[in-house]
Image (tube, rainbow, N blue to C red; front, side, top):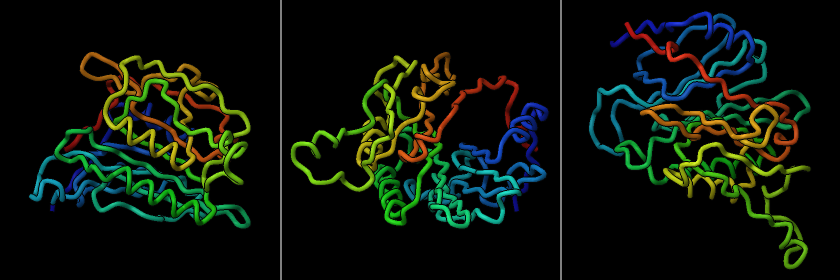
Length: 264
């Protein structure tokens, strides 16, 4: 069995992150199925690693990569449960349910880059199907993910209100609008790349809205990825209209480059 003791090179920075949070989601954990994520006192952790046998490649791979994990404060242990996780390690869904309240479904996801041997062309169709199941249950949705999609400031919705005024009797399911929908800003000027079509189609067809570039603290849509001498926005928070109206702050933290996983 392959075992790993996972540590962080700047534990004080990471500790502050957990001290200030009820939920911490991680993408690209690079864990094998028999490895365990970082242990944080006071938190339970659920993780979904990329399988050793890759279904797309059709062979066993021993390369670390992909995988997602989410840490939930123990104070929420009585109302959180695992709802669903994908067999390819790309996503993990949690259900939060307080007595008398509508359920909240939180997903942490990682979409391998388009063109990667690990990419699945049906990924966004699968996500849309899961979103539809949750909407049928009457739940609210929050996606926190690396979608590997550069979207510029392209609209993430279809304004069905026009069609209601002129053609339809009611809005399609899942296409309610927030009370106020600010214009979305994006500091990434690199154009449309990656899974942009699939991601924007997911938002518009499911009635979900991108929070980046719209919420106090991230009015300009800060870049979230800094690699290969460049920067871009590929990591998004996406929410149901009911959650959009509750969002009060979104901040993109630029962690020091010394923050990295150490394996040994």
